[in-house]
Image (cartoon, rainbow over all chains, first blue to last red; front, top):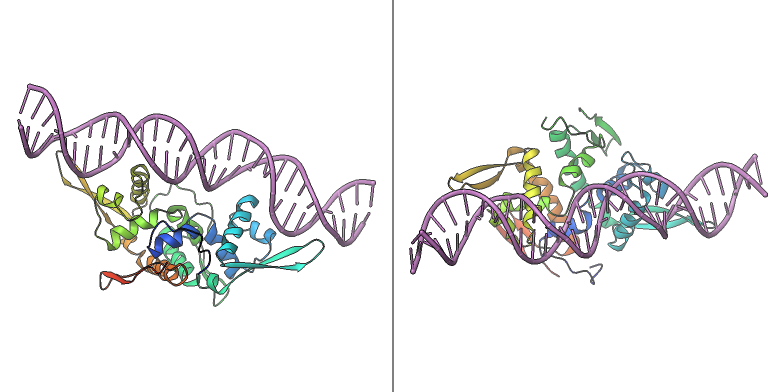
Length: 125
Length: 125
DNA sequence: TCAATCACTTACAAAATGGAAGTTTGACTT
DNA sequence: AAGTCAAACTTCCATTTTGTAAGTGATTGA
């Protein structure tokens, strides 16, 4: 397992997951990498929610530390990176779908269908 | 929809859900209410993760504001409350199961089966 | 040489968190 | 009657995290 140094505060899988994913931004980065074709720092920063660059930087570092995201330079001089999900990161898709479904049903948010690659229900409020 | 006063920062269902659930504690409270028979303030506070009472108080308020949790007095003089999930709160079960599954697979956390009401795989690390 | 782009980092005020102690209401014991 | 106990919170405050804005370094194109 990655990061054997880290001490989890709990043996519960949910608590452990939340130590990595439990904030308002991290899963939005995963969402953009997973579905919206955003792969550079700039693209991720220009998400609908506009997360500030210092937080994006920190979140990407954490996601890379935990092996949910990896990056590769797509050019040298100056070096520019492309961020992508690892298998471990991609396995969050069902979780993302569940959260989206709940938010759509109860908070009136939009609904995106990854199979069609588009929004199938707009936000209602 | 509840709380029409609130302005969501985004039309995305995931972003909206995270405005309510996106922290390290809220879903643990939901977990304890959903599966572990914890319904009083004290019981919730004595969870495996021991969230401090000021945070528990604030989280319960938010969950009640959003109609995920309700409370009823189970005695007067002095008044004592029992917290329970609403339908809307209970509908987070699939989400919780997904997060748990991911945390078990990738972070070595335990696995709880609500059908059996017990842990079916212990934390591995 | 100057402006522009990308990928960040730095600085700092404001807000959230976490730990400990205190408050309120009433019952129960001595 | 006074003291103890318990549940359910609230208050206090130091530390950490967040959010806003501005700055940096590398390189290309005008």
